Image (cartoon, rainbow, N blue to C red; front, side, top):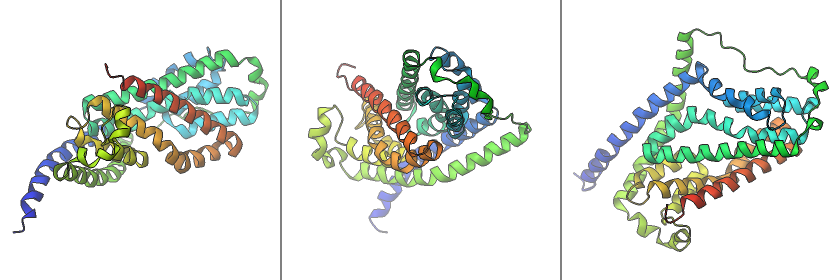
Amino acid sequence: MYPIAPEAVSLLAEVLPRLGRITLFITLGVFAANVAVAFGLIRYVAGISGYLTRPANLPDEAGTAIFTTAASTTAGYATLAEYRESGFLDDRATLVAVVMNTFFGFVQHVFTYYAPVLIPILGFHTGVLYVSFRAGIALAITLVGVVLGAALLSERNVNRAALDDVSVEGPDGDERSARKRVRAAAERSWRTLRRIVPRLAIIYTLVVALVTYVNVESATDFAAPVTEQIGLPGAAVPVIAVYSLDTTAGAVTIAPLLDDVFTPRTAVATLLLGGIVSFTVSTFKRSIPFQYGIWGAEFGTKVIVVNTVMKVVFISLSLALLLIPSW
């Protein structure tokens, strides 16, 4: 028997129980999330949108778009695009509505990604702390949108005469039976798990092997002068690099390093910093095709710039809060 066999057995003995536990929680979480979506739970959460649009000097109809965003980002943006193209909302009012959309777009991801996938990977403490900061960032941006609307918008930014030309409706009622909804949720869950779990197994095994056989802190000493300036371990650099390319892979990369190399606070700060770095990748990979497709190049660029600036500012403020030494 080759000497490597006992080490491989030891590695698998460490990886498989963790991987099995994470996979179980992800499976249950993804299925529960898809059932909640199928039965309209997200729409109930989104019902508070009307309380925000009125103080922002936006018409109640804009609340429909925000309401829709919680169920479908594409549908929400498409509704706003229709309002803008018809002349019902001018560019300024539309940008304010886009900013206010932020939290409601986040709500969708809580049900479909953060709760069922990310929290099981990061563990309850770190996962909830990370999601709480992301929620706070999204809510802060939405509230800034309300303030901007109150300060910058008036009746001049809304042309109610154009409303007759708008043929956008809210989400259609789901007439499927409960059994069909559950079946659809199960099918959607299977597609998600088929995509996530193999990648999770490969990356998790590689990271655990790396942590087991390589001194991660020593290997990342070259980055220490930079990371120490902001209160993060040198191991934050490879995590940020991976996270900037793939959010789930970044979470899987940092998970085995929790408690030993990262505290929950520094782990959340590292992932948030990875989020800032990832904007460069995500802008070209997702934002430009999506926003240009919805708005066209000129206004789509404005939406991308506004969204990116808002997120960078509030993530930076969150990082400052997380990295206060006395926290």
